[in-house]
Structures are given as structure tokens and as C-alpha cells.
Length: 282
Length: 347
Image (tube, rainbow over all chains, first blue to last red):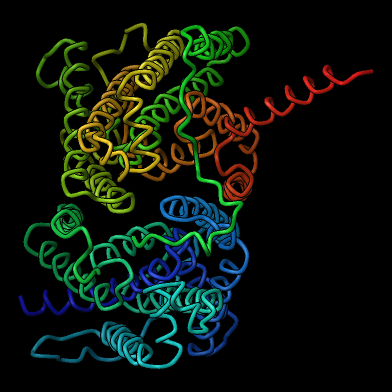
């Protein structure tokens, strides 16, 4: 049981990381980025290609982060402009459709060039006992990185840039009145979200391979985690991620693999129906 | 979602789709349906010899029917039902399994299948309305339903055939297996759905739909029972989806999870409808035709097809935010006005 819960936490922190990138962009611009999973896969492929040239793993991982962040910036600077001119539900819908188009483009290009591409960051070493459970080194690394990012995001909220971002989330006009440029904040958050997507792909590949077709699965999972946690809430995304991760591994262990997805989805749907604002939503 | 003040919204912001009133005269309200039906009825004369092309045409009509159903639910009442494929799948699997396992006549199976899809869709709508979920939350709950359905079908292998799919034996020698006959059956359904949509638009239900789509709060304050009308839309649209799926199972003879997959059905229907024009009568049909043709053109491009499809989606939505049907309407009106002013001008 202890092992199952620990596995759930490892998985859940990755879910959380996945949800954060989605939730941040939504909180800021009211846009659900359906190309999010594709950004993660793009980063994974960049890492795989860089590794294949013989570059050290850290350099490869960094390149992946940069490429995904740059994709985020380009997306924000070009296609998202007309979206921000819309408002309310029209903004949501146009954002969904345009990013869906981007998702198709990235997916198609990657599948065309690397039809069987996959990233697996194998981290060697003996399994380490944690609380009496032997954990693989890859899982520990993935967990450590996820926790570090969560901590960094909490620290970031206290910085000037973090406060600026938070003020834009709360009230765009108010932020503008105190001299914050919402467009610049959005671009920054898009870059951050791209980097987070890359990080998810990289940590995920430490425990199981990330294939070139995984884009939409990442996106759907990110959407569910972000919505269950409360759109716009970073802590909520991590909380939802860990809870869903534990639900997922526990039900996989006790009930069976194929029911697990249904249990996970039912848990998500139930949370939304019970608390339409999400766990920690405003 | 927090309401944004107008100050930061630029003036060229145009909403997606329209909620225009249908024409008052009976003839003007229904002639577009007659013309569309007649035009589509001619397609087999042109493609009838090729079984492959007719198969594609039938698939296009099935998607057209899905799009009209989705238009009733999402286009008219803003409930983002991301379970179009799943509800059609409920209809298809129920109508395929029941005659086989319970020795029921095919028609009874279809009726029960439609009833089940209607009930499920109505339930989803009711839950969304009761908990006053907004667009995104409705979308996520119905998406969760979609994915659960897909998993259930995969898991209940002995009943559904799992990933390999299910051969529908009940209708093995029915006329529905003939592609041209199937085409006319689906065309008939499409026309009936369009008529239902128009009749709804012209009734008090249509008034309520337009009111709640334009501004939910004002509609509620003006005495429109927003919740009830949303559930009506959910029920009607789901019934359309259920029966389309049920007939499809028997006409195609083979169903598998990928036939009703979210990425295959829902994404496409959303793109088709948003392109054609949310809430318009002919938007779903136009979207269907355009994307069927685009698919045929792109078929030789392999994986690049996905790329081109994505680029097209981006270009279309940057260009026609309100949908193609309203854009074409505006263009025709502009031409008419030009012509009129030219006539009025002294030579």
C-alpha cells in the first residue's frame, strides 16, 4: 500500500507540473492552450535529437526547454493577438480553435519527420529505499525536479515579476493602471508554460518513454488536472495532480488497469460537479 | 470567469457565430433546406458508380448529421458537449449489441439505442445546468464522459470486441448495406434534422435559445427558464446523435472504438461547425461539404495532411470568426446593395 501511494505521489507531481503550465496561461489570458501537449512532445523530440548528436544530457535538456519556451513566445506574439481582442466565451473558443490548429501542425510535422520517435532518459543506479520502499532513481529525479519547480513557482510569486503576473490574473485593468504591461506578462508566462511543458516531457521520460504521438494525451491530462485544481491556481494544480495520481495508482493496483482511467475521469468529473470552481479555485 | 470591461477590447471584436432570427415567412424559412436537400440528392448521379466515393459521401453525411446535432446543443445554447462521438457510439453499440444478444428486432434495438443516448445526453445537460457549469467546465465533464466511454468499450471486450471492433450481424443483408441506399437514408435524416432545427428556431424554444445565447443573465431576468431550455437542447441533440450512430452501425456493418474516438469525431465536428457558422441553419452542412472536399484534396499528402489541416484551421478562424455562412450572407447583401445603388443612380 505504501509503495502504491508513493508511486501515486511520483506520478501525481508530474500531473501537477503538467497542469500548472495549462492553468497559468488560462489564468492570465483566458486561453486554454490545446497545443500544450504538442509543445511537450516537441521538446522531447528536440532532446532526443540533441542526445543523438552526442551532446551531454544537461545540454540536451536545456535545448529542449529553450525550444519549447521559444515556441510559447512565438505563439503568444502571433496567433494569440487576435484572441486577446475577443472577450468572454468567444475568447475561450477562438483560443481553443487556433491552438488546436497549432497542435495539428506540430503533430503533423513531428509525425512526418520522426514517425517512430520517442524519448527515454535512462538514469542508472541502484534503487534507493525511501520509507522502506525501493524507488527507482529515475522516479526520484523526476520527483525532485517536480518539487523543485513547485518551490520555485512559490518563490516566484513573491518576486516583482510574480506579483505583476498575479495582478494581471486578478484584474487586467487594475494592473495596467499601476504600470504593468499585461502583454509583456503574457509573453513571459507563455514562455514559462513552454518551459514547463518541456520539463514535464523530460521528467516523464525518466520513468517511461515519451513517444511522438503522446501530445493529445498530455493536453487532455493537463486540462483535467488544471480544471480539477481550479483554473488559474498553481497550488490547486499540484494538489489536484497529486490526488489524481494517488487515485490512479491505487485503483490500478486494486481494481485493474482499464478501470483506472474511468475511475480517474469519474473522480475528475465528480470534483468539477461538486465544486465547479475547482479544488482551490477562486 | 471575470467579466472584462469594454475599455481594453478593441472595436473589431466580432463574436463567433450568430444568433440571428429566422425569416418569418414559411417559404423563406424552408427553401434553403429544400435546395440543400435537392443539391445533395444529385451527388449519387455523379459519384454513384464508385463504391469508394459513395462510402466517403455517406461518411460525410454522417458527420453532417453529427454537426447539426452539435449545433442544436452548442450552437444554440452554448453547452460545449465534447461527447458527440461518445453519444453516437452509445447509439451504435447499443443498436448493434441488443439485436444480437437479446434477440430483439433491429428497429427495436435502434429505438432503445436512441433512447439511451438521449437519456445520457439529457443527464449530462441536466448536471451541467444544475451545477451551473460554464462552457469550459461543461466541456471537461463531457470530455471525461467521452474518454470513459472509450475505455469502457475497450475494456468490455467480450461484449464490444474491444479494440478490434464489432461486426454488426443483425443487418447483414439489409438494404442499408448498399451505399447509394445508405446515402439517401442519411440524406433523409439530415434534411429532417435541418427541418427540426428550423422549426425549433421559429418556435418559442428558438426565442429562448437566442435570448440565452446572447446574454444568459438578461434571459434569466426576462423570465426565460434558461435551465429547462438547455436541457431541451441537450435531449434533442443527443437523440439526433443516438439515432445517427444507430443507423450508422447497421449501414456500415462494422464499428470500433476509433469510429467514435474523440480525436476523430468531436474535434472534426467542432472545427466543421465553427467554420460553417455556429447557430446558423446551413453552417453544419457547409462545413461538412468543405471539409469532405478538403480531405479528398489532402489525401495524398500523408502526414503532411495533418499539417495542412492545422494551417487551414488557423487560417479559417483568423478569417471567418463568425463562420462562413454569415460571411457569405454579408457578401451577398453587399453585392445586392451595390447593385441597387447603381440602378438608382442617374445615368
